[in-house]
Image (cartoon, rainbow, N blue to C red; front, side, top):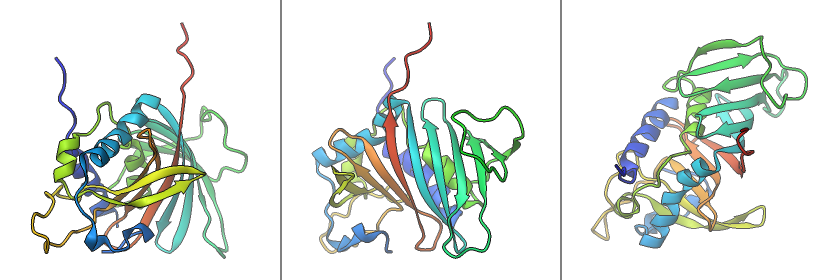
Amino acid sequence: MTRAPRTPVRAALLLAALLASAACTGPATDRNADDKAPLTVQQAELLALARFTNYRSAVGTVTATIPVKGRTLRLDGQLDWRAHTGYAELRDETPGAATRWRHLLRWNRSTVSARFNWTGPRPDKPPADGWSKRRLEPHSATVDSTLLLLLSLGSDRPENAQLLVRSSARLLGHEKISGVPVTIFSGPGTADAPAPTEPSAPWTPGRTRYWIDADGGLRRFAARLGSADTWMTADISRQTPPPATP
């Protein structure tokens, strides 16, 4: 039986739960946000492809900047959107910090394991031992919510473009990332409210931003963490997985 396209409601509810509990203006792309019109069908179809394109690629690399209580953390690693797993190095890059640290992380949608105070280059594969494992706490820990958000950027179905047209998602502009033209979207709001029908109705920016290329590929993702004007930003590069071993 064919499954119906995934609606943005469930995706918005997941993001809302994570973002509201992890920590209206946003990145510079929110300029003149009050003037933003609802998405056209073509724009909605492009936004609808982003997470599905990641899933089809299966794996990708991520470089994320995570602000945590006055410190700047950087996450560099790999994501597997089909297996719902990640493996990365997390390090403190706070300017002027007296101490710096680097940890290896591996995680899925329920747990995270850390190899603390790693000193060498990140191995291509996770070390076999030395890990400390615990449950993810996305509702109280900014890093944990970021890890779960990154895994949520893959979906086995496109979003429902017709519902995205009626949602609070908006087109924010256009720019280039590493020379590649991208379209910038604000994702649906936390309640996935329908677009205002009155010209004077205010538009409330969502907590997510998507930079999407012409093929529906997600090049950058940003999320506002908690109630403060604090944004996590992740640059994403999809990879072609190696052929399966017979």
